[in-house]
Every structure is written in C-alpha cells, then in structure tokens.
Length: 377
Image (tube, helix red, strand yellow):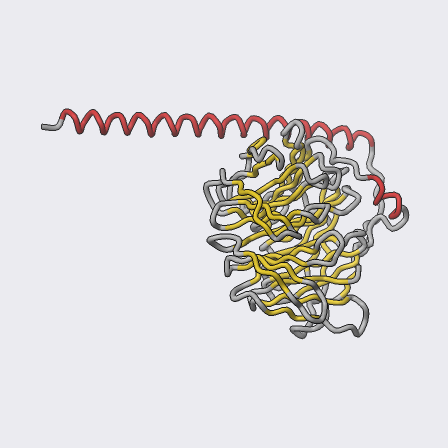
C-alpha cells in the first residue's frame, strides 16, 4: 500500500503517501463537493466524481493534471474502474448508470431503469457484469455486453447506499438506510446472508481480498468487521466522532482506511488471520449459506486523534481469543439460523402479498372515484 486517495466536501482530492514523513498532494479542479474516488487497477490513474456533475480522471503526480467528463445532469455519486482499466462506470442522481472508455475518453452507453437516484455502481471482477444500488430501494444486476438488466433485488426496506462484488464474483453485498447489509448469490439470486448490526444507516462496505471478511461503515459512527464464513460479527471499531461515511480495504487486505463526517481519514491495520494470512488471501471462497446476525460481539474503542488535518493514524485492532463451543450449542445455533431463514422467507412473502393488496385497494378506490364521477350529474 503506497497511496491513499480521499475526497471531501471542500471540493478537493487528497492523495496521501503512506511512507513516514511523506507529503500529501492536494488536487483542486472540481467546483463542488467530491463524492467518490477510485484508483485504476494499475494505480496510474485516479477517477473522481462530484456534486458539480462532472467526472475527472487524474494522473496522481505532483502536476495533478486531469481530464474532465461532462458526465451527468446531476450529482455523480460513484466512479469505478473495470479490472482491465479500459472502462469506467459512473452513477448519478440523474437516475442513470453510464459506462465510459477510459483511454479514448468517450461515452459508451447508459443504463437507465432506476426510478430514483443511483448511489453506487461497480463492475464485477471479470468485467462482464455491473451492479448498481439506488434510492428506489433496489439493487440491479446488468449484463455489460447486452446492456440489459439481468435481475432486480428488492429486499431492502429503504434507500440502498452501497453495493460491491465479492472477490470471487459469485455474490454481491449491499448496504442500506434500513441499517442492514445483505449478501446475494448472483447466479441463483438467492439471499445468502442478512446482517442487522448497526443502529443507523450503513453508508459503505468493502470485501477483504480473501473474500472471508466484510467491513461496514455506518452513521452510528462505527465500523464493523464481519466473518462471512461464520456469518457473524467479529469486531466493532470506534474511532470516528460522527457518521463513518466510507471504508475500503487496501489491495493486499493488510490495511483498511475509513473516512467520516468528522473530517478525519483513518488508516487501520487489519491484523486478523495473522497466523495463516498468506493462505487466507488465496482462498476467495464465497460466503456460507443464509446466516442472519444481530448479536453483540466484543467492541474495540480507539482514541480519536486530537488534531484535524494530521496525517492518517495507524491503529491496530486486537485479535479475538479463540473460544471452544460445545457441539450441543453449535447444533442449537444451526437450528436457530435455519428458523431465521424460514422467518426471512415468510416476511418476504408477506411483504409481497401486502404490496399486492395495497395495489388492488388503490385500483378499487380509483375505480370507485371514476364511477362516482360518471354518476354525478
């Protein structure tokens, strides 16, 4: 990990050099708040989106030169490079997802089935799919070649703030304003995992490169690290004073960075799977089948840096002590998880029926009004 990029409400980008005593670069160009940043796979380019409706592609050196895309007709919420670096996908409050050629700096096509602001759009690891999250409470999966919507995931009870692919490309995780994180299989479109651990909106998430862990950032000011293999919460991290707005693992997974409304950018050392860390990075298994979690796990408190504008703090989280679990307890927990699976499916069916009932009631009322209008002299 050599560089860290951050965007801010001050309309500037910062590129931080992680070596001690190295200076940070401040890039100015956007006319309004910078809402998103993303490095190209090679690290030679940096994309940013802004409330000024533009996307800029920067060469992250001392000159800070950039190319401007007059991308959207409203705030740009998300930018993401394809794994080959040839394409860029952007998402906006104008309800569209757009795909661009990076090197030719040319607009390619638009995806426009969302009916509200699009908060996030990401390429799959192989570049064949695109996933998008919207304030219309849906997550949509798109085929890049046919440009068609493959599937819509409608289980969120509120705006969907963020979505990303698992490193294996077999599933996606989405965060929502309903305080939940959901994981779906993109092949069967089945809900695999459901987490309701935060007490406020979940603003961002990031998969560990091994695919075994997921980190979330929330408006409740905490970060949470989830063990996807076990389907449970590992750590709750306290550091930000106010909403944690973004979080991302480094390419190797050894570090992760978080940003918040407190104007702080923090760098944390992952420090889990220390014993077999190299093996963990090679695994990339998809998560276990449906697990639903809302229990309490150990919380880790860290002091917030006193000064503003200082270089990012590096904080080390303590590994959890291994605990022996009796077989009977394991069986009981598996039974509970199975029951929660049934309950989740039952609630989903009830929600669908309620929606149908509401639609029919609305139609009846409209028909009644039409009849009354016709009968009134």
